[in-house]
Length: 592
Image (cartoon, rainbow, N blue to C red; front, side, top):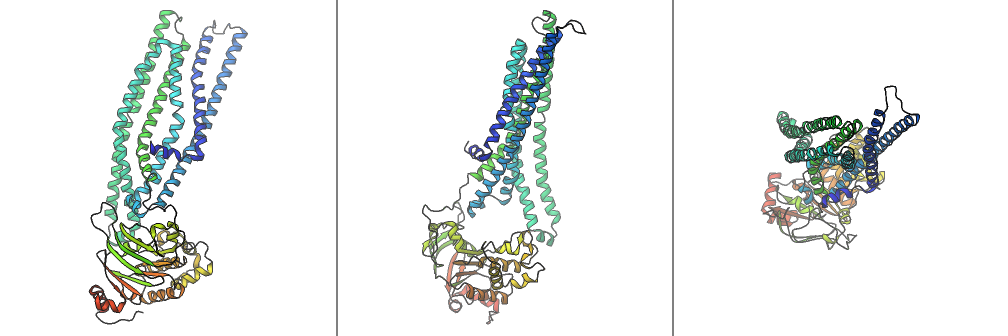
């Protein structure tokens, strides 16, 4: 129920179209159940005329004509109500889908990395697309039939009882048979639909990985392997859907049996009563109406069966959507957040961190270090030593598991999240460029930046030269994922974007690995002149990238083993000295 309340809460401005649909369906159902009775009376009236030519009085003929006009008018009103109901229904269901996608996407934007790690990317895509579409279709069918079908069934049974008396007893037999049959079908197909959505996640994951890693796939000639992997999941979906649809297809023969039973029972019993009682107990018009009411009842139950199938499919989608909507971010603002970062000083005090509460090992253990504002700090360490994890705690992408982390003299948990992250610019190890022009990408750092500011930071990041070499310059369109620029060009664009923020803290997570040492040196020189008061943290594999830093931190296995200047570390740090000698063959080198 809490999940359903969240789903229906997404209706908002589309609540009134939903209510209007329900009202129109009530009117349509009422009119449609009145038409057979009026038609039965008309048939009985015509039957009472003597002779084929008719000896009815003008008054009787006038009554027949008036009844015919009334029937046409009622059918027209029913048609109008059905049409308007369909329009309002489509508006409400499409609106619900729009709001669901908006709310889910907005919720995902608030997630911490810990929350995002809980859902795979492919699963979130499936929930935002396939699952929402299933809920939209189910809601569209429900609001059109949730009132119309039961009212049609109830009105039809009441009218049938008034017209046919004992003939209406066939409902007592048919309805339980259908209900039991539908329940058995639903119980059988629900597990199959549940498996389908899990397979959709795996299918989307396979597509995503393949598209993102297309160069690797082709480089290793693994196209056939990827095709087989995709086909395996696609075939699994086919098998589950085939099984479910075969079971659901039993609806049709079950319904046909009940309809035929309805016709045979009414015609046989009705004809027998007419013959036995000479039309005194029941007449031809009443039998005709009883057949119609029987069909209406069965059609209502058939619509219920269709809804039942859709609800069965969408129930798993509702659950999956609800998981996203009810997921609360593990990172929240304090009650009275601080909205200004004083400077770029950073203090780690006994900080330990693990990615989940269930993790046995800590990724960082007992980190304690002070970094003065405006200093340049290098971080060196092997793969998996915790370098990236350490810097991701600074803008509070994750919260420390224990200890305290301060930026600008205050615990990061006391800051407004947006304020803190606006003050910390990160150029990540995996550079992300978005589709759009180069100017649009750079303005992510500062939406109000002027063209001159954009060109200035591009020159500092050593990006201006290659940008101006493009025919469209800064208006060059970047393809999705930055596929039309090289790795080094992508890195320099990301650095320029970060510089536009003019942050208190700038973090480069191995983000100059794809540029040559001379360009790397020029970029660092640009930092000294453009952002002298910004604290600069540079994670690098090359000693040359951090040699001139005010302090270099050496990490190993989630701990800080040593820190100091380049010369100090050569004296006291065995790890640093080994890396230095490997990169220089034991000799000195020029930082250029």
